Image 1: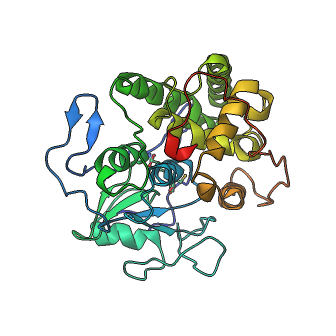
Image 2: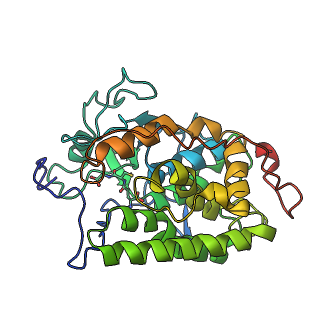
Length: 334
Ligand SMILES: N[C@@H](CCC(=O)N[C@@H](CS)C(=O)NCC(=O)O)C(=O)O
């Protein structure tokens, strides 16, 4: 979108001169009062946390949006924060609301047909990409924030008064480690799969794949005797890791050519992924049909046939075998 106008001529996949995928930075970056940005950084101004005031726009397909849904689910914030779900397939008009399709909803605030209209509600001269997730403030009628890493922190740290579950994902004593893990895995794992899949040169692809599998090898070893990404407790670091691992074998391995190994071939990463899928509330956030339909049918440059592969159909609900490791899930999620 440029100056509030939807543009059809913008490159879907942006890259630099070496062929390396370049992700735009997001532009709505406000914070809700009382939430925690970092170990020593509690937000003092901004809109107040309230039940029923904030609304999420998500795609079930998107790993970034999935972070916000996962956080909302494990905290038990479903009644406090409402959600609209876009059509998984993104075509020329961008993210669309098609309530007749399985798992999709109408746009509940204004009855809009496209997510870009929500961006225009927030800023009629908006210039930038129209991405999910979006955290919407129904009182101020604007976008609070459209950066998943920040939204998950806000949902975790600002809404305990309205949460059904006693789950803290950014607990004292773990915060520096959580931040380190989130920062470390972003370029090589979370964005690493995109760097591989959207590379426009062999060199950029080779570098991305090498970084990605080096990181997965390291994490597989680390998770052999460590239950979660930042230690013995479930934290935001796991949320960040999870949404990429969940899509890996079905999508990134094939569609993004991250095919040195599948997650199912890594004993500890695979058990870890299964354990997270099996936490109470998480299954409702898993929509592999949306995931596969989105990736294989929304990137004509990468998959011109638009065909969606049948497999490999991993069994995320097979026993995970991690109960003997120190630590474990919060009681409300066991
Ligand atoms: N940095 C953002 C990235 C969000 C993002 O790129 N979302 C994708 C879907 S997976 C999107 O909406 N892409 C639309 C586009 O780039 O035009 C975040 O973490 O929230």
